[in-house]
Amino acid sequence: MTRPLFRTALAVAAAALVASSYNAHAGLWEEGYEAYQRKDYASAVAQWRVVAQSGNREAQSLVGLMYFQGQGVAQNYPQAIEWLLKAAAQGEPKAQFKLGSMYANGQGFTRDYQRAAMWFVIAADSGHPNASKELTKASAELSDNEIAIAKRLAKTCVKREFKDC
Image (tube, rainbow, N blue to C red; front, side, top):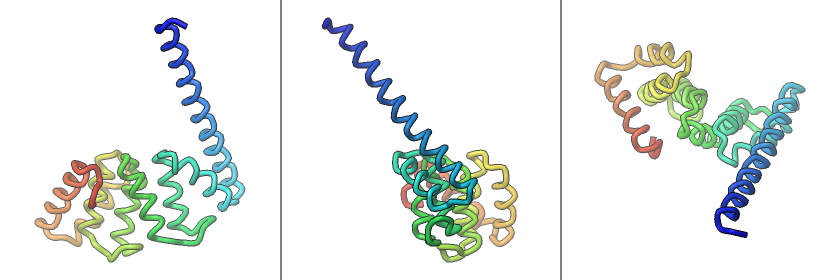
């Protein structure tokens, strides 16, 4: 096989491998969705966990929400936070918003309106439709200086690629 032909064959094989991996995960995604619609939450979270472990931010967010709600798994805030942070770090607005809500409500964290505001700023910047409204609510509990700090924390969090947020 000549070198250009070998590279083309290798590229085609790599594309096929990526497509088959995508199709396998798409199937698991759909199976999880169908299980969720049947209220078979244990099956849904099991399917979505496989997709989440491959790095899919939406699946990570859903698995986090399942742990938060205790749907198909025992309610477990630390596990919820772990999955939500993975999704949030990839720019998933729903996960970012949920982290803000958890801080605002003291669920899995000590209630902290400044951290809630930080996550709501991040979620709003990512396009979450309700984040600005919740930011306003959280900000009502803070001084102007604390709001400014929350906004700086949000920028720092994003700049550090969500490390130590």
